[in-house]
Image (cartoon, rainbow, N blue to C red; front, top):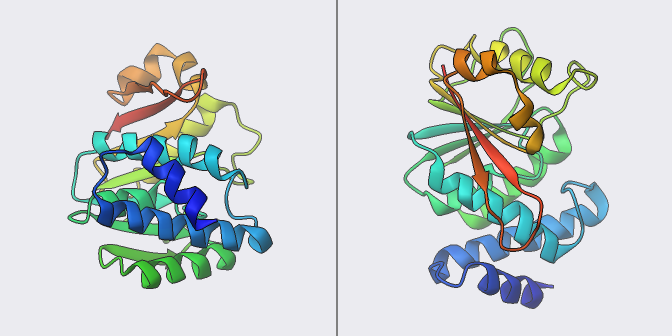
Length: 213
């Protein structure tokens, strides 16, 4: 497994320093091992995960500004783990409410010696919880509170919840084309920019919504 991961990583990130490439390889090896029993990533297709999830996370990593981030609903650690590996000078909190994910993330932090990572078990929607970072990250975030909402209502609900935390000045959302169908009012209210991720591997594009609070 590790050899296939290494070959694909070298294809996708030929200029990535070997130390960071090795960290991502070790992370992915753990991810797919745990996925066999824990179902913690979107696909068991290693090539797809690297070319879609890891690549898109790397583009997000280049775009973000700030020194501290909370990856909300981190799950298997995307994009938070990649952000932490590629930016060792930035502090990253991996937040999730499920024990399975938290146990996995703690192992990743320990095995990779990611000193800039904090793993926190917490429900984002807990009224007593406040985010303790400069920026918040979302990727395909879902919860029974918002599962049946339309995309715009869901985004407004998430941002309203984030705003309770006074430390947060920016929100980044790694998402799909529905971000292009948001109303003009939403773009104006949040001073929002939608950055297209042009993928060399897929015809469909993802987007990074950058929101200023």
